[in-house]
Length: 69
Image (cartoon, rainbow, N blue to C red; front, side):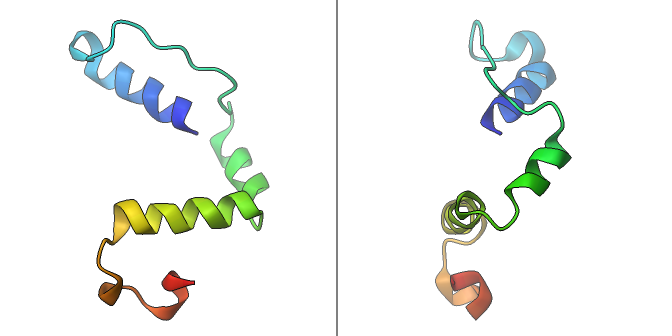
C-alpha cells in the first residue's frame, strides 16, 4: 500500500517532489479489492493497531476500549 501512497504524492508534488525518482513494485492495482482481501487477517489487525498508535491517537486516554484492543 505504501507504493500507492508514494506514487500519489509524487504525482501531486510534480517537479517539487523531493526525490529524483521512485519505483513502485508490486503495488495493488485495485485498492478496494486489496483492502477487502486483507479484512480479518493478522496483517490488518497489526496494521490498524500501528496506525492508531502512531498516526491517529498518541494519547491512549482519548481511545475507547475497542480501539485499545
